[in-house]
Length: 232
Image 1 (cartoon, rainbow, N blue to C red):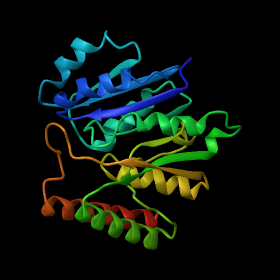
Image 2 (image 1 turned 120 degrees about the vertical axis):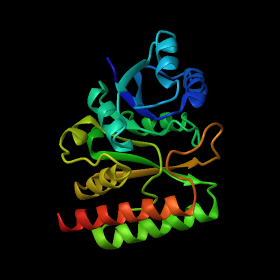
Image 3 (image 1 turned 90 degrees about the vertical axis):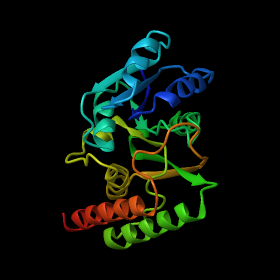
């Protein structure tokens, strides 16, 4: 029986995948756990790598998406295929330690009503500019959506499968982080936050965060989605 499912979308993350799996495999509390790696339309050698290592790790399942239509789409596909009672996602870029996820899963243990809990990290040791944009986005979202939303894009995000199954019209892009946190607030779930340390990427480069221009594009898209949510 699977109790915990973790989804990690991978877009051209072949250099990080082996390190990611070794890190998770070294963790000694992998009972009733599955890891779902979503090859989200990668055009590097991610697909071949996943095929080669898929039999090495018993807790690993792979979901293939031929065409990348968004960060959120890959996560949604993975979450829909998950078998766990408590599910969630994090990033593949190793900027946060994947073991942080298990700290989040531990919060759900022995709860009488785990369906009423939403667990999310709070990023530490971030660059000043990144913190500035994150704080600004959090304030805008909180004001327009009239609920407290902080460090919206922090990882991991963990919640009960029943909460996820009640949602619809999930966004296929980075707005998914905002949508899930907002819906957790709206449905009056208890929000539990815990610190996760944020580091530079070990390998590769971000598919979207490539400077100030990309940050402003990201903010504009999120602001448009905030307006959409506020009028829905």
